[in-house]
Amino acid sequence: MIKALGYATKHSFTGLKPLAFEREEAGPSEVEIEVLYCGVCHSDIHQAENDWGNTVYPCMPGHEIVGRVTKAGSAVTRHKVGDLVGVGCMIDSCRKCEPCTEGEEHYCQGPNSWLATYNGPMKPAAQAPDGKNAYGRDNTYGGYSNVVVVKEDFVLKVPTALPVEAAAPILCAGVTTYSPLKHWGVKAGSVVGVVGFGGLGDMAVKLARAMGAEVTVFTTSKEKVAEAEKLGAKGVVEGDKVAYAALANTFDFILSTIPEKHKVDPFVPLLKRDATYCAVGALAQIPGYDNMQLVMQRKSLAGSLIGSIAETQEVLDFCAEHGIAPDVQVIPIQEINQAYKRIKEGDVRFRYVIDMASLKQELEAA
Ligand SMILES: [Zn+2]
Ligand SMILES: [Zn+2]
Image (cartoon, rainbow, N blue to C red; front, side, top):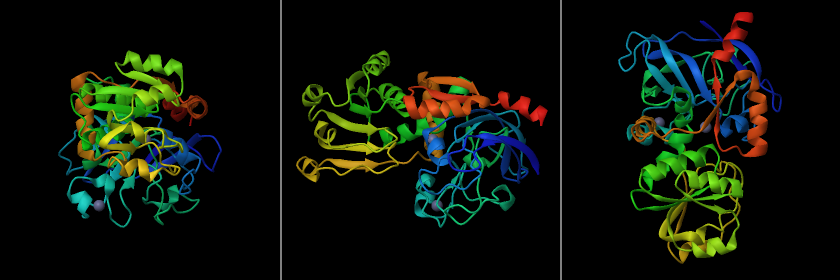
């Protein structure tokens, strides 16, 4: 076993604290990774606080992991010791169902769906003494830790052209916005709306701009309009009825990145005929919409979940090629609870990224 240290919340609504635990040694097809940086996703907070009702405690979040391979199993062919690699939201899937065999393992329909990087089913039980998760299994621990062990197929190559700390959020925020932009055919000349301008919105704008789209950001504040303009997008304050009227029937695609309940009704009239409004951030429910608005111009409401492993590699390479990186603020892990508070209160536009070197001092003290 590998002795490991991370930050976890032991019970709902308590802060994250240091937790010593053990990980299994890398098997033949697995790599051991020293975690260098881990992004802080809004999902981490939802999970730590049990907003989805399926959290197994202790809960150690973190699914935007960038690190260095320190060990490779005997059958590993894709990665070698010293490689800079990434791990996103998934670390395994059933590999047999239709989505898996079609390279869309993030929609795995196997009995346990895909295996989440944290709060997913995994042995040994000793790591989750408080109980079982929604799959009736034990709990995985994520990247708020000094080391992870992952099957090589679910490990991404991080291009050297990317700033290491800024690569981390591409593994969730990046692919979560890239996948729907690609699926709904956004290309040069497309007119794209981005609703919400936090960590996901930031990436959605940068990626859509790099694809050649014309982008409008819908945001809650005038200050953020100016931020959107800096990225080459237009900005509209949410609820501005005059601006909305002028934009009626103009969008090919609208991507909503709002991580809370929100109303869809104001945005549907802005879609062109046959266009789609897709929610990626709304893991909570979307309040009722007026179906008449959809049928009159054959519009669609849609959802999209993260992206496949292949798409995750694609978006890492796309960002390196186009010189795109998320806006990040690097913090020591000791500031994680304040970061959570600021994300919940302030709807921060950048992504917090934990510098895992800060964990070393606690490891040495332990
Ligand atoms: Zn995430
Ligand atoms: Zn599957």
